[in-house]
Length: 171
Ligand SMILES: Cc1cc2nc3c(=O)[nH]c(=O)nc-3n(C[C@H](O)[C@H](O)[C@H](O)COP(=O)(O)O)c2cc1C
Image 1 (cartoon, rainbow, N blue to C red):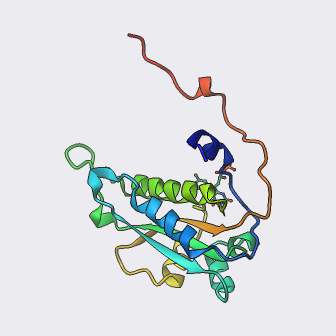
Image 2 (spheres, helix red, strand yellow):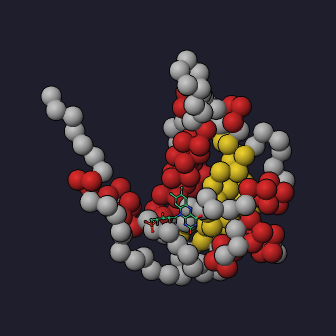
């Protein structure tokens, strides 16, 4: 898919078929994540791939939506904050979450390109996620997505007009 088509084709998929995700497509999506840029190339992220079969109840403690556990896989992007670049010369801001978002975007766009569906999820219970995924200290769950074949269709893209979202400073 051309990039311009890909970014229009991606949407938040909230219904999934039970069909398995071929391992080759999962590996492609993970490789796209690996190639994501990160601040100072620190790569302060880890991914956990969770097969949903048999774990539905535990996963719904993390995010209680039926569609969350419909796909055969759920993916969690985590950060390792102590590995992340911080703007320490100024305000100390950590870019760990920015890095995680880029990783997730690469993964989801690669999945979309392969005909798979996904949905960014931030509104999950982090304590439940830590427990269910058995995350070690120092690893923070930041984003989840189901990964599987879509069983719904995209609605119209509702976005603010571009003119409301950017400005160019005068010469
Ligand atoms: C950082 C982030 C967090 C999100 N968290 C959730 C979520 O917890 N639950 C959910 O259903 N959708 C979530 N979404 C999906 C957004 O609601 C969705 O991307 C937005 O409404 C635009 O729709 P589209 O993805 O279909 O283009 C999230 C999206 C982003 C980028």
